[in-house]
Image 1 (cartoon, chains in turn cyan, brown):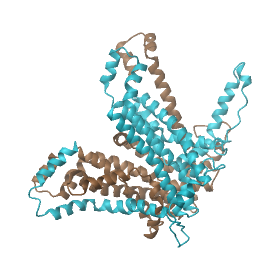
Image 2 (tube, rainbow over the protein chains, first blue to last red):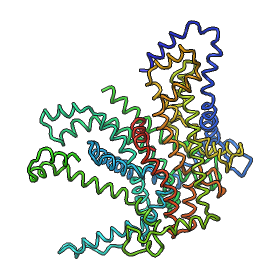
Image 3 (tube, one colour):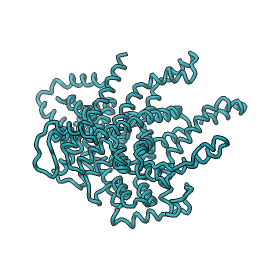
Image 4 (cartoon, chains in turn cyan, purple):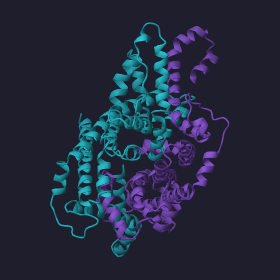
Length: 323
Length: 293
């Protein structure tokens, strides 16, 4: 809808533009100067500079910075800790993306019909999203506390209640508090759980927008055809929601691969490297070991992962339009 | 709930009503429980911050703090020497506000040019800005850090405020919005002899107010909550922002959950208030841009 307007303006302005043309263009660019200045110094410059650094053995404390080609990339791909961090991050994504999106979608379905409490529900579900990751982490550390944490308390109370049941109760063992963050078995899952609490509302809003964009007439037509609400969901909502679903899934994967704050504050990659993620690896090689060239190479590898999912999304979405 | 309204108007027998409406009621009940679960951690944070130590570590947790004590908040002030929470609060407010104003100014100028002016190079430049939006922030993290050091901006406010304003999101959002504004007013202003600057200032900015509000909220929240950038670009305790400060608390007063939750509450209440005040714009903005804050 923008294109015709632009063409129109060009036609209108074209005559009589010649004399002050240069001044005219200059004035247009003046509007862009502040942004372009920031954009080149803090985006374009760094993106190229970062790639340049990634090809060098750039240690902060040394002034000798030889060109090493793709040795940093190869080094990362041969480093067990990097591979472990890649696997850990993928494991995190596998936990958070499907389950988190399912929760977001269910929440959105729950509140997509306007009712008196809709605003309250929506705010309650969304509220965690606006909180800083540092607060989220410290708060969940308290909730996860093995001895005094709320979560272990309620699980204990729940198990105790089950043990009171006749017959079955006798077979349920007494509850032993789960060391949420200090056991390699649970730590990543604990990080995933708090991340889902933190992020569920964000995708919910996107799903909500997707649901509300489905024309009411489709549902009416389905109802006239005798579809019950279950059939209406699978024949109308689900196909109509596919682009939104895809969009959220891809963005969630990209977000999951950038998980950092939670593990930085809560576990620092531990216990036993079980929560060592890619960005934590990047951060620690860059800012604890000062191996900047290597860290930049890791950043570009991360970019590669993100790029694959972004291109996948474009591909799938354009295929959908062709259908 | 529509259920209640229906009872009043139609006066059907209660039994039939329950039979018809029970899935709806059940859904509401489930949603209510989920909402409580979602809010519980935050309520627990505030509750803990208002308790004396003796009430915090109990075998059976108590939700309502009684007697309410502001002792933990007092402690925040007492420890200002090693953990200056109020300085961090000031830093966070100052940085987030300045960042937001910078973003609004710079991005609205650029968005106006991209949406409303015709000049050679416009399309490729805009494509470049949009294309860089898919690059994750970690890619520029180290080079920008090195640039900041060369500028001697380490441990300064400008380092916290400026680099984050270079992102393409605001330009993109505002441009999309401006494209949707009819040109009549601008043309009228043009006929009246107004130049581009006057049009930008007197016509475009007032019309773009909803989009500017959305962008302002996102920029503020983003800057307020940012964790990684302030973590690497400051190391002086007085230059930290609240999110980093919180983790300093966590490192120092490992088991003093009352004080820690008080600090967490100080860092959270402003954003919760901002959210409750502006939630309409926030929700609309996310729906508009598909962005997660």
